[in-house]
Image (cartoon, rainbow, N blue to C red):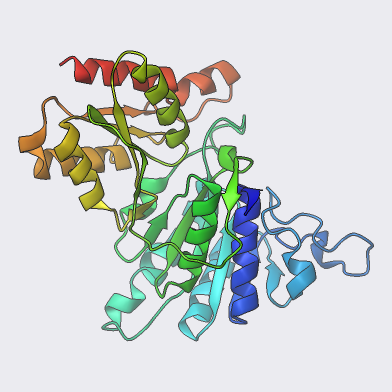
Length: 338
């Protein structure tokens, strides 16, 4: 088994799906590169998207299946919805989740509702790949983690992988799914590495994982926050606090049984989410525990989130904006001592 970065694991998952099914096609800005100039040496695959995730795919599959688009998300997302309805499996790349407003009608009112409005007879098997996350010094319009924006919409499935192996297995599952899937990739995780199986094995959507076993408190961590939660758990272990870390991996559907089972075992819950606190995944998971695990709780549910402000451009302010291992550990100690 080889070690791959998250970026390369997603690339491999895309490639294997395209090899297995000729109906899988990619749409997006600069995903092929070279601005369509096949006559220019080195033009093919010059970009592979803003983070190079699709590099090499245009060379292998050609411009019919890896299509550079104009800067018109409403147009090519609308085209993808139509293509999905007639049997294709398009994967659309939205450069940054911050640009979701441009194509939100196509996702919210078209892709998400078609199966319901046609009585289950119409499938829309498409994937929207996009990038989330602060910490890249990209300012307020390129740094948001808008998971809850998509998870709020019935009919959309929402995936946010943390590790390379999960990223590959989940992109395969997303492409094979018959419903529209929003696949959120954190830009600060792209270069994280781990062993990844070469086999084309999907991971069921809606299935979370225990990243660390523990008995004193449950930490539910959203995507990149698993990195800081694991660091916090090591520091807490020095104080004799044994934290269990849950990574839901997908947020619609959400593995509620995994979360509730962990809370029933530990009696305490801290939810860590990089996104804004209002109407967030952290708020949703906290409400789940309050409604369905209240009898197990030994302390109030706690949240660690970003502040309810735009992402700052100033590096020290941006670093403060992102939940840290120190903040997580401090909130866990407060909850355990309640």
